[in-house]
Length: 356
Ligand SMILES: NC(=O)c1ccc[n+]([C@@H]2O[C@H](COP(=O)([O-])OP(=O)(O)OC[C@H]3O[C@@H](n4cnc5c(N)ncnc54)[C@H](O)[C@@H]3O)[C@@H](O)[C@H]2O)c1
Image 1 (cartoon, rainbow, N blue to C red):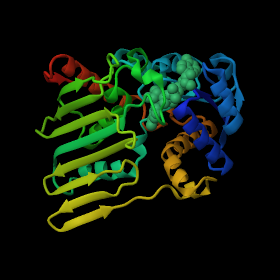
Image 2 (spheres, rainbow, N blue to C red; image 1 turned 120 degrees about the vertical axis):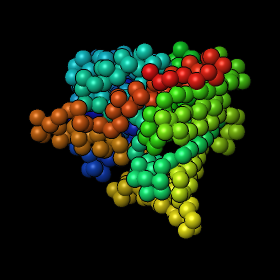
Image 3 (cartoon, rainbow, N blue to C red; image 1 turned 90 degrees about the horizontal axis):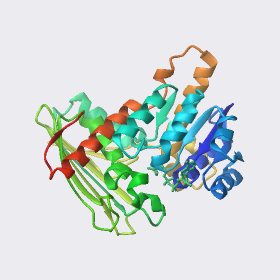
Image 4 (cartoon, protein in one colour; image 1 turned 180 degrees about the vertical axis):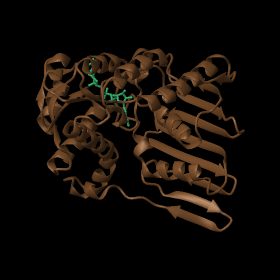
């Protein structure tokens, strides 16, 4: 059995703990949460009480007793936890963003590459974006010409998130672009590939220095296609988090306003096709109301895949650890480079920047 340690027992750490508990209780994984640690001991104790495991007094005490670590601290603390776990050769699941800035993200990525790992860019597992990316890659409707991604969320120092660190640039690295839209940047890159140039403007209106709440970025591609991202943190508390993606191909428009199952709308000269998807059938074994089971499956599916791979690696011994985990540090770093280009362009009045 894989012994799982959770480092950082706040919002997303608790979501992962619930997912791991549901997977373990339904015998869907050969693993279980066995240890928790948080700088705030009450949080580690609470997750352990409800989702299992033993609260530990230090990171090192947790690392002593686990096989794999879920790093779910706020962004600025990822590096220390990831390096400590990698130094022991432990497998690591690291939440996104890897770090508050590109240079530190490169260090986190280097540590992750030393061990079997996976990154929490969870939209890579959303059937709706997989359908769009594979359809565009198939060129069934001709080449992609343009894409528009809109992501809006209420300023997340309140409500569900309730995390003051999201208003502190030293902890978060920035606002809506790095903290939330790194997911969108990754999806756009997945769909259209790497742009050659990025230009962007950002604004910050809610009184948190260095935390942009509005951003508009343009990605230009070698073949002339263009993608645009608008990312907003507003104060509409009834809009928790919402995404819309439109992709124009030569012979079709594909769009969705759901970021998990879709449907994808495919508009062509022949009419409109709806491409629907289902949550994994095994999520029906979760002991939660169906609506929560489906929402949790977004996090449970990548976790199950990662743990299944680790169990297989342990059984086979010789399997190649560099093939384990999806997405991996390389994809996360590519998204960080685009985020960095957005910030560099915005700081330079919107001047286009090449992507390093
Ligand atoms: N993939 C996703 O969908 C998703 C969703 C939400 C958050 N996140 C990411 O997850 C991370 C955590 O976000 P959150 O919303 O859970 O924040 P949070 O504030 O709810 O939880 C963070 C926890 O980390 C703890 N912590 C901070 N430094 C620590 C350290 N050195 N050692 C141990 N614990 C420490 C804090 O005490 C807190 O309990 C962030 O990087 C965020 O960007 C990802």
